[in-house]
Image (tube, rainbow, N blue to C red; front, side):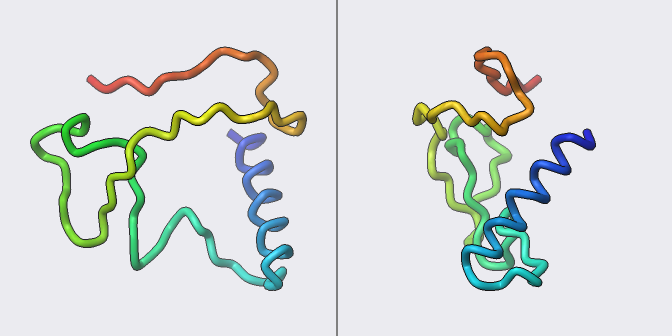
Length: 83
């Protein structure tokens, strides 16, 4: 998914520039301190991890304004499904 990777690289580069560390390599998606999970333990199921690093914060369901730079051009809502 090169287009997605390119877009993510640009977003992270812009973020690093805004916080004053343009040469940094940190990726805010990964933290040694905390893992936010946009779900609930009940939805994840009986094997849901519940250790100290995991924080279930519920679904991210807030409407967002359209992003004209997004590679996605339709308005279809994607819903993750599990088997």
